Picture 1 (spheres, rainbow, N blue to C red):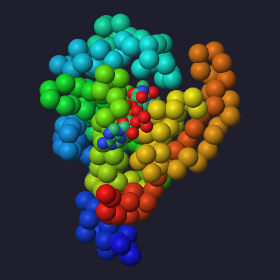
Picture 2: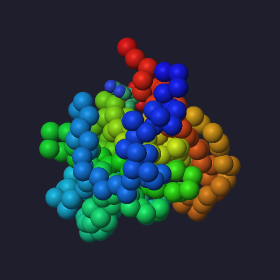
Picture 3: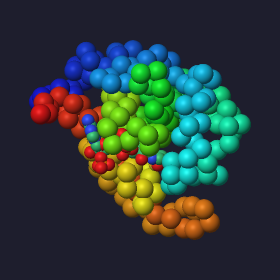
Length: 213
Ligand SMILES: CC(C)(COP(=O)(O)OP(=O)(O)OC[C@H]1O[C@@H](n2cnc3c(N)ncnc32)[C@H](O)[C@@H]1OP(=O)(O)O)[C@@H](O)C(=O)NCCC(=O)NCCS
């Protein structure tokens, strides 16, 4: 793999770089993985999304007001359905992860910095589907798109220090735990620690190129 991240390699393999700008303004269409279809959220996803947004175990470590009513889920789905591409810094790309016609969860990429070619990853899955690696598969696909297609340099993810499932997922994907920000945010009225994980394009690409058994 030596030299695969040279400017020439990036030119050949990364459409965003070929486009002559750090990023190609990207309106997302779809990704297929081994088991999942990843595509923008639509209002037709309301039932499936509400099925997990209303669960206390799903909201446990997330910022916000806890389990959502159907009306709150409707607003959330409407907002996510507008998050269909990364056009300017600050935009969010949210994708539904579908298996056999059901939305198992959502993954998102938040474009944090154009200058630093950096984005933040996020994910929420229905526990009904947990333990099968579906969230890992969905996040891996979105990371791949972010690096290969969109031309990112670094992607990071953050979670409450007690959110073990989330920390395990990022570790499983080869993201490095870079920091524990002690009492860095107020979580349900208490100071909480937050873990920061990250991976660079060159790390992701060399990992993707390494055959795994
Ligand atoms: C974070 C979250 C998405 C993780 O879900 P998950 O079910 O653990 O993740 P996956 O679907 O990738 O499944 C991974 C598990 O399946 C196992 N697994 C089985 N087959 C697998 C496969 N083919 N590939 C990868 N993992 C596989 C893994 O070993 C892992 O088990 P472990 O947790 O006991 O180590 C989920 O807990 C969630 O949505 N939580 C609520 C929302 C939230 O907190 N979001 C993050 C905010 S920071």
